[in-house]
Length: 111
Image 1 (spheres, one colour):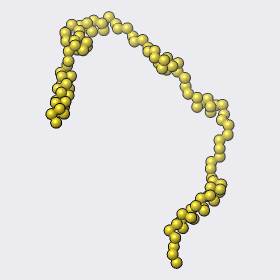
Image 2 (cartoon, rainbow, N blue to C red):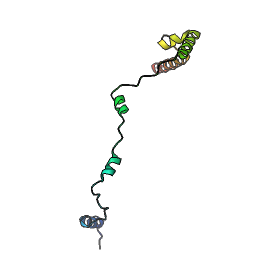
Image 3 (spheres, one colour):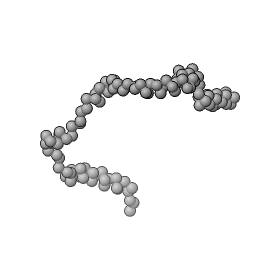
Image 4 (cartoon, rainbow, N blue to C red):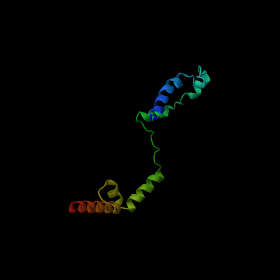
């Protein structure tokens, strides 16, 4: 007798609708929620977050006289500090990365 390779397919195709029609063991559906449960699930509202989302920021504390003097002394001690802050002068680290980038570009052009 010749066996058909499609026998499992036919069996499953006949059993699938039967399995769907059978009642399943599902957990009971929840009823109405209590007001206390709903209040616990509600998000906490913070008005400061709404102001930050709108784009405003909190003002920073003003500098004290001692802090201003310390910044002025640091500015006078290092004359290059102003040039570095203004972007007029490159630091050693920036020169290094520029040299590496130039080397890579030169290597690509030569290849």
